[in-house]
Image 1 (cartoon, rainbow, N blue to C red):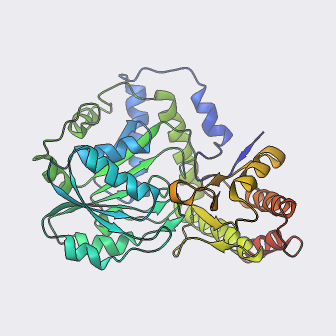
Image 2: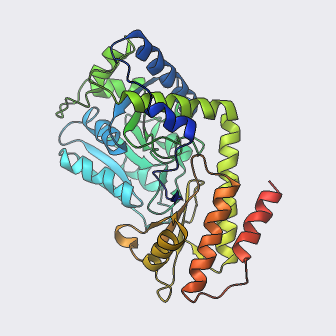
Length: 373
């Protein structure tokens, strides 16, 4: 059996997966309405918002598209922080809908110049950014961006697809008008659900939006949510499994979940350094660590050996970083055991490819972090 240690999808806990195999219930009946309302309530607690939250049947990109089509109009100006593969995705979606992109570019893995937001904010309808870009493992200072945007007419839209559930976020306090997330990352479920929160400020902008929308029309979701329903047939089994996953998070205590992610991330980072490798991100996240791999080792070869020989699945680089990095996931239900298994396999694979390091240096570094947690 393969152990998924990618930035997503993640290993699904047995009690969560079990819910997917239960007999179907009808999505227009009271039983499902109660489940959906409970799921929505729990998502609001994790997002730290009192505003609307909707569950969509789609990948995270569906929620991202909804965040563009519901609040903007053709010809609007939108600031996009293009800090990685998924920051670029915001720009691509905006362009597809005829929205003018005011790009703030940064070297992948580096922090953008946030002062550029204030310089371009006049006349912009929205600012699009990413909490954790899984292509680089970089964490953005969303709180700081929120302070810059909240006093303007623009809405702040955040891709928290991988970050939600494992990285701190406070939608209302930080002034986040729209937050997008998905089921298959830190929330420990299979792919197929996405989530989107909407502030009153964003709803005001929705009144003037003229972009085409049907399946992702959030006004329809708001109307049906009053009845505990979705406007179209939802992924019923996934919603039931999400309820179980959110119940696990609630039982562990969300602050404890965040601490666990922080500890796992630190163990991985210290292991990587002990093995003589360099971390890509200037501000690394607690979700995924992107590691630079020398050409003489070969990032793709490393990924393949770990998968085929040791049954540990990690990810390689995307787009500009393809063949240059590996990405080690440490999110969801993972803990000490999984991290140590991944680091051990990484050490063995590196040794086979001729990389020199002190024996068991990575595992020792990780254990030291866990011992001091």
